[in-house]
Image 1 (spheres, rainbow, N blue to C red):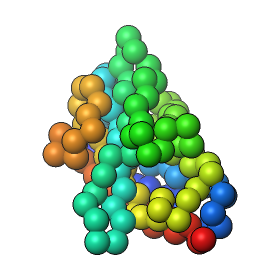
Image 2: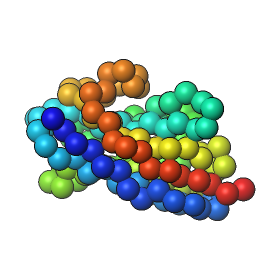
Image 3: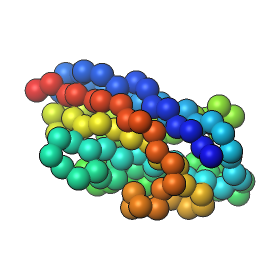
Image 4: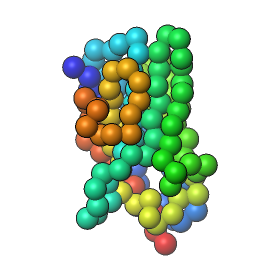
Length: 126
């Protein structure tokens, strides 16, 4: 089992920045991916970005078009922690943000992820 705990959400003005953290504990594997998803009120959960680690390919990242250039995913493998740095935030970025983990390569599909955190609220004021 893998446990994920997000933190770092909050209220920020438009144009501001936040950094979310996702700490993983429990069983780990030599190759896994961590994804970030978000769900706005009344909307489906959507893919934000992901990072894939393996002993041969550390730190490959992928982003949704809506956040590309504004959001950055990074990680500290030694700490089993993934970060989502969000810059130039917009009111439409308001959502509950979730991190998720899966074995192997990353995916944009939430159904492919085996483990989920509880979510952290991000609110961007206009």
